[in-house]
Length: 135
Image (cartoon, helix red, strand yellow):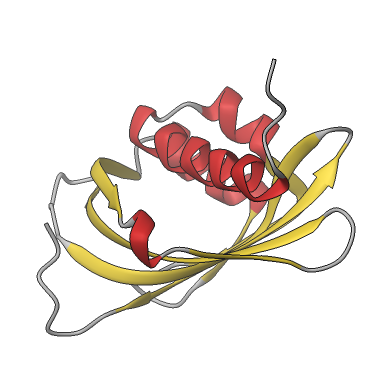
């Protein structure tokens, strides 16, 4: 069995986060998100706690039709033992509770921490990229 490198493990956790959003999988989010998780959302710049974020995803207040990542543009940095930072680019199709669909091209920064062998996301921030085709 081949053990993934730290970078591969962090990248896998990053991909699992996006998949949990698409699937509205609150159980996966509960496992992936650290207790101190906060997110700065790409649409409004609002800061949301872990609980509020999981509740919003579970209730369908925000859903994701698709999230496309661009691996060639992803940068992973190890920030000491048990800490990693991912800077990447996505194209997302989120919709709100009323079903209004948008398309957003963004850069994001995710901060991960190793907790008992699991890479947990502690902080996420998305920044829109104006003038960039999203999907």
